[in-house]
Amino acid sequence: METLVLTLASLFAGFIDSIVGGGGLILVPALFSVLPGTAPATLLGTNKSASVWGTAAAAAQFHRRVGLRWRNLLPAGVLAFAGSLAGAWAVTVVPGEFLRKLLPLILVALLVYTLARKDMGVHHSPRFSGRAELLATATIGALLGVYDGFFGPGTGSFFVFLFVRWLGYDFLNAAGSAKLLNVMTNLGALLLLGLKGHVLWQLGLTMAVANVAGSVVGARVAIKHGATFVRKVFIGVVAALILKTAYDAFLR
Image (cartoon, rainbow, N blue to C red; front, top):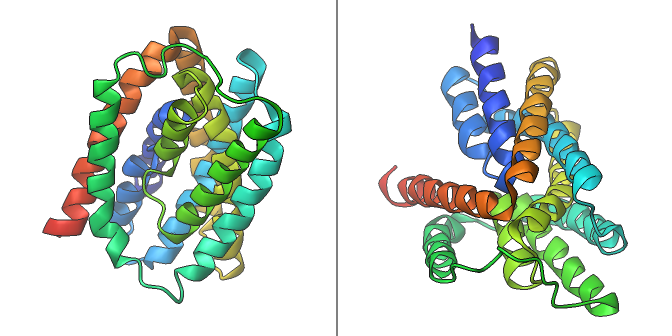
């Protein structure tokens, strides 16, 4: 029964995460609820072992149907991976409590800004080209790589927002680019946690199959319905993130 519940949670998490991120809102609480006696680091590592495959499958779907700007994303992916390792190391020496209380406020500002700019992310109009776009993409990868390794919640949504607001992508292209960089940040965290023995590999493999299935369906739904649909899902996920992070920071 435990495996069935977590498999279904992983399926739904993959569906949501493939569109705008936020799958951890579903899968991480499910893992903590079903396996309360397991070390938190092991639950987080097991979550990464499933979600990394779903995120990779979603990135492949976006590449096939929308196209990804590989020239910019590959260097950014390397920096995202390195940043994730650096962030995971930093969390062992620097307390992250300040981010727990700051994150809900950042997310509220992000949501208000997105709601106020009703046309933001609807049209694909990249602001940069050539070396400038490469530098901007690499900066996003490095900064959010560190954030994902150090803290994590909302990384996928932050990727999408920055690609939309800073680089001028529409939500659909931003979601595709975010998937690839999120794969690399997940790999960095998974490598560190795996080497430390904090992954339930057998359970993670079962959850990974479900996560991939949900991610493929979610990516296809996003591609079919376009940027306006992705924007609506983004707003919903950010609102849910605000509630979850505010509860964790101020009420738990």
